[in-house]
Figure 1 (tube, rainbow, N blue to C red):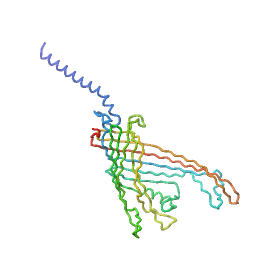
Figure 2 (tube, rainbow, N blue to C red):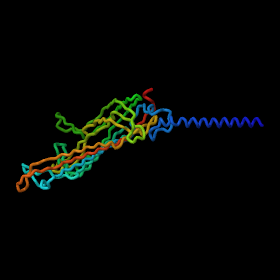
Figure 3 (cartoon, rainbow, N blue to C red):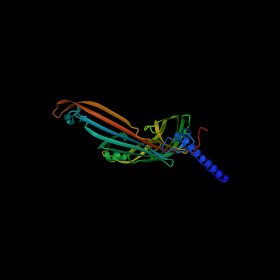
Length: 331
């Protein structure tokens, strides 16, 4: 037998075994890599566990938070005669309200170091009592405009530092100037306008891994996740006090609401992290019976009973994209 042929066969066999060994090593390593990958958008292969990848200083790059509130009210008389009755002062009794609805949304969009706030209101009410400026009866259209025509752009930086030991810190800086804020000064006869809202907000607490709402991958529970809140006040043209016309609104305060949050950790890479939370529903129901001593047109006294019902539903949606330099804060 040719010795050179034997050598070639031996070399081919060694190469074949080496390839087989490499393939076997990869197959054996896959469970380890998959154990580091829990989110759908996590890296397919990673030598770092999720616990290691989450340790970083994360800066909010983009995203949004949405809050939707719906209120439905009803007031129904048990006896239809009460609709035309009066009280002891000859004043009409409350009018029936059937399926009266008010829907209010508040949205923050985060992008390019800005937090842009918008709000929108719709209602089936014909006239609304607005408590601003001592109380005004405002028409449906003017009231919807007053609580819908707004856009507040806040200079905004949000930094989230997470450690593997379960500690985290949130540090926020913000700045916004509103030229329409009235400033009352006793030393000046003329009204001054314009105010700057700025400052910092720092919060330190704990986090831990948890099962998410779908049970398909791990979530993260943060014991306090501060979100901005903007309060606006409308200004009306009161030339005709019986028909106030909306002019503009201005900011009265910028505060923070800090609540416990459970996020879906949709993506966790060395330099990218995406947190989501959807349909966190809060429900409130109130039912109350009101009794009145009333009189009909002929002077007959009757007892009127009316049932007031109020239903409130709130939904919150969150989507946050963070970036980091990939450096662990635990090193």
